[in-house]
Image (cartoon, rainbow, N blue to C red; front, side, top):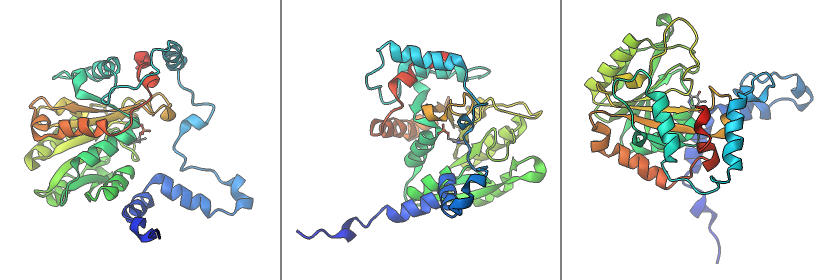
Length: 302
Ligand SMILES: *Cc1c(COP(=O)(O)O)cnc(C)c1O
């Protein structure tokens, strides 16, 4: 039999090209590939966003001990349930419940391989032909890549530098239409380092509610807020608009290689539940791989 290369040659390639062209790693690989090898030792890799490479940024011994204890117990060598182990889901719900008017339950929490997989899951779940998603500019390029891969149309709204990187809500209203599924915010902001005020989040919630869309709040930098604005999580406004919070231990604990993240649904009015979004998240996690079980069970340091 003659194997036809074109048969595989290949749906996905175009999507992969579109996707990797806009990732931080894609750009870095392109740059590093073009550096004159003789000079490469004098290049300072400012695009290398991983402080754990440097000896001055170490995680706490409490986190290391939790991992070692979980591993040595020999109780966590098994597969984990798709949504994650219950004690870890409970620990994350408790951790995120501080100051929340509507309390989360462990059932609202889904564990993922870092915040990266959390993004992958929500973009997959929300993608359908003709749909679009509103992303911040500047933002975190993985959203663009994942959307390109899933044929989800991206529409950008600007963050306004003269207003401390607030969301341009007029633009949001202009670019949204009946096929818009969600608005993504990143709080605390990457790459701008801003923190949204409660008033700003309130306006975001009101706008999303008016447009009938959900808010995805990427809080990968939860608790790493600098400046005078107090950090408030978007989910405090969950009764105004449904919120999916995405987070992970990567940044706060300086352990991006440990790959533990989460999707948390703040949906007191059951809008996401009734519309099937929650079931789709659970189903997606049934057909994907889970964070390592002993990492999930080293929750004591959260
Ligand atoms: C780092 C980062 C992520 C990815 O986090 P991981 O847990 O390392 O996968 C997602 N969103 C933002 C805004 C980030 O800065």
